[in-house]
Length: 259
Image (cartoon, rainbow, N blue to C red; front, top):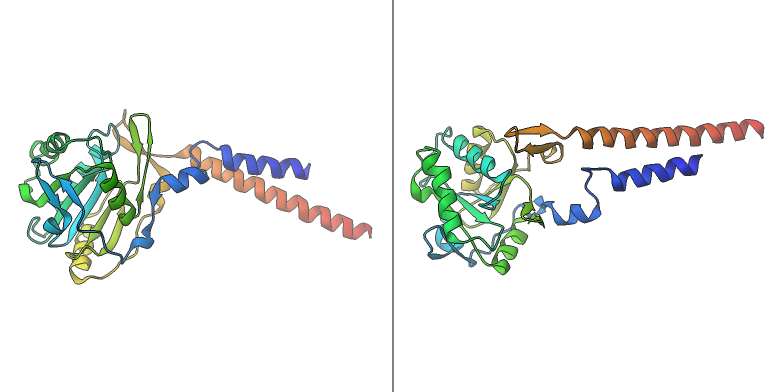
């Protein structure tokens, strides 16, 4: 009986829907041990105007980085819209005090895809953000791999979609990574403090990690919902483990009494 319970616990942890297995953990997520390291600023990308630019040319002030893709059918558009909305509530001047750089993690996207998304986010969204305060970049596969590795961002493609963490990364003008803020929702205060910290080169711990585990995007309801399957599944596994421990202890006590 005890062996059967142990087997069930082990199999449940591997097969539970929504519970990241070993491969998924390695392929999708955020490595915040990159805090304090520097981005390779010599990497070159193509901006939304079709011009080749290097990060060294762009990163001359505190910078908010977003790793998304422009044809994303789910989380990327609301994530970009969320950042666009929240930065307008921060009493800092975008383009002067800080800037935003979005980098597509889909190397097949072109500068025209970047231009379309920029129009949707800044102009159609009526954010009032200056055009030069937010850059939308694309790059080839090697460049995208190098920048995401340096940033601690891992992702995986499934069909025509790419699974990736909902996170923004903040760096100083020297490319030093000073903070990660986990989405999908952001507070103006956190963004403001992150910019201040980046200005001074201070490293701040990653916040709100639990949101990456518990929330999924619901494209039909256009909202973020609690991943109850994963949470209840985890509780079931914990319950099974506790029951197993109880039976082991009980068996040992009964054996001791017989002796």
